[in-house]
Image (tube, rainbow, N blue to C red):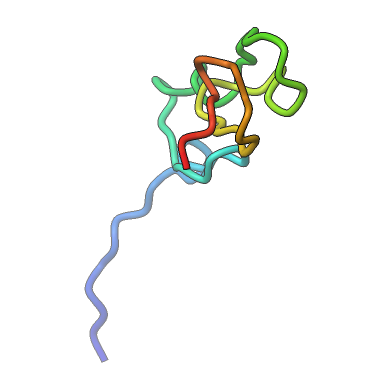
Length: 67
């Protein structure tokens, strides 16, 4: 049985973000790992820019609830 060769990627560089679930490359690391000083919302304070706050009344421009 012949299986086509699947190219192997370096999984350390493409791990999914534990805040948003997206796989990211080193160029996007800051968006997924560096905290954003966003304001008074207690749910998303200290979270990176990729985080989506689930609070309906979140006032943070970066993480505001978009549901």
